[in-house]
Length: 186
Image 1: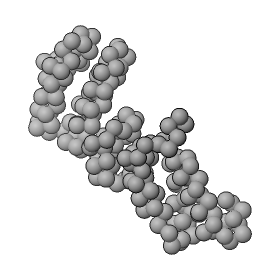
Image 2: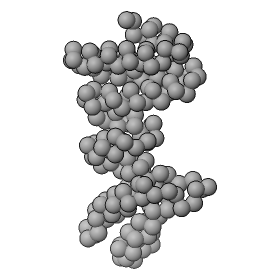
Image 3: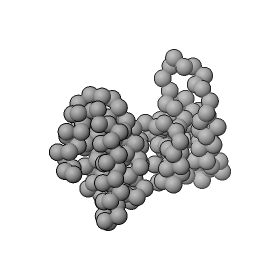
Image 4: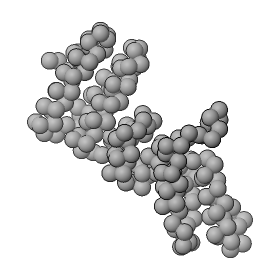
């Protein structure tokens, strides 16, 4: 690619980088593509092209199910987070399963507990369903992280209601409930 840029064939270099991104779906490859297009003022909007391509793939089954390739939803979420398109990221996550690490990044990036609380609760439930002590502790840590962001009495009230729901939903998970009660006394 660098050779093409050096020879002045920037559009060919961008197309090559586009093909690389399509094959890897790695954020670093996307960044290189966008930087190249921006730096050289290319007419193709690769940001939009990548998003459109991923959106078209959201509900399609992978062509080769036995090889690893990132899911379109996770790749698109990564782009939305990178581009700070938080509303789009939130909408994407609303009804699709996504990588928990990316969901946590989104919850942190939102900054507003009113928006991030449902995401944190989704992450906590996922952890607790793993039914092991490490996951229970991770769930408690997520709740503590969320609790540290609460600013208003209304947010603390919603959080308290969420804790009640967790206690009811997971009452059979004795270790989780014990550690939840220790971390957040009733």
